[in-house]
Amino acid sequence: MSRNPAHAPQAPTEARRGLSTPAPYDSCVFINCPFDASYRQLFRALVFTIQDCGFMPRCALEVQDSGEVRITKIKRIVRECRHGIHDISRVELDPDSGLPRFNMPLELGLFLGAQEYGGREQKQKRCLILDHSSYRYQVFCSDLAGQDIAMHDGSPWFLLKAVRDWLASWLCDTGVLIAGESHMSKRYQEFSYDLPHLCRDLHLDPERLLFAELRTLVQEWAEQNA
Image 1 (cartoon, one colour):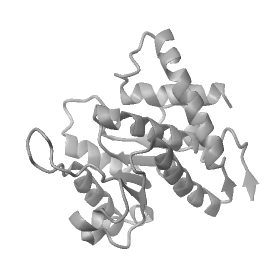
Image 2 (cartoon, rainbow, N blue to C red; image 1 turned 90 degrees about the vertical axis):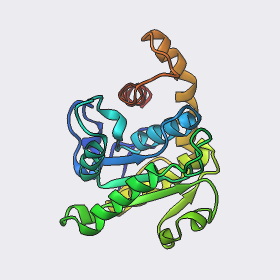
Image 3 (cartoon, rainbow, N blue to C red; image 1 turned 180 degrees about the vertical axis):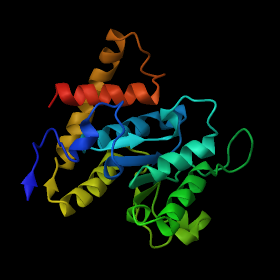
Image 4 (spheres, rainbow, N blue to C red; image 1 turned 30 degrees about the vertical axis):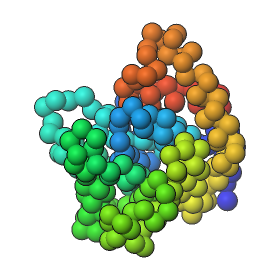
């Protein structure tokens, strides 16, 4: 069994190539989560953890192409990702419309459908489902019973642990070990401290980063702090 440097996991190695180069299927992780300001801290922790484990985070925000229908974009990204992380913690009623938010369950259904009915490569998909608290999902989506569901309680640190452990279990099956949760949490804390300074140097607003900008900043920080 191989062991990567504890502070800079390098597997799968393909995921650490230039972000402009398409990453291979096994390295791509589809992110299905809210994108609003109240989820920002969790989203940053999610993107950081995926990349610090050596994978490539993907989501519908990565392509700013108004000519591509959103659902078509999502289906394409789902098809290109072996792994999927789905946070269903925000299906409560929208305070403005009074209607439930079904984007996340819909995208989870697309991912599970591809896994069930796709070809041999698609059947290799694996997913982690996240929720805010234990068994809450059974109230609004009992069909998920038996799925791999982890709780984060709205904490970036709980989310980091759940995602790190899930990705690490797959890497262990391939003969690769990565840094433990406490070390990765320390790295995320350091990145969070450095992020405003990195943004200031680049004349970026840390509260208004594009997904592509965040992904690039995480990669550059990880390489400089390997």
